[in-house]
Image 1 (cartoon, helix red, strand yellow):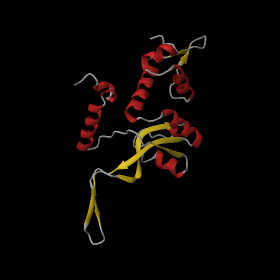
Image 2: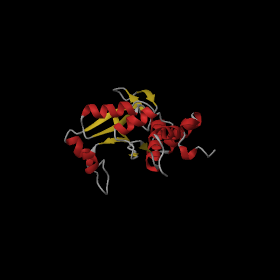
Image 3: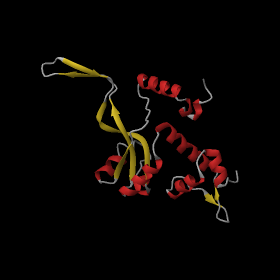
Image 4: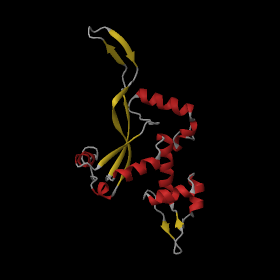
Length: 187
């Protein structure tokens, strides 16, 4: 593949040419240039653009606000965090152990890593070749004050339990336009 122009890449991936320029400026998708200086999008860049589009569709993360927050903080990494919901129903008790109420899967006063990151050069250089960056790099960056969070209150679908899977299936059944690309051909 010789490469697609910015207009062709925008048409194939569903982004506007303006957003492609923004993503390039942020260093997320950087196409090579022709001898005359025109952007040329190859298979790698098209896949990156499609992945970002799918991320946006699935998680509803405002990428522009996410990148702006990263730049404003001046840290070496920013992670998307989502509110933590209990996987259990919570029983509320009075002082005398009388049950006063029930709340099904309430929101807890904590945030969880949603698995979406903006990583600067220093953070990338510190990623382990093996092992878990959440056990090494991220705690180190947090200790040094170089890791920031982007609070995301929108859609975040995780599947860790059969109940989560059922919720995800129900959500995607109600919103087929949001279903992951690979699943769209299946019924």
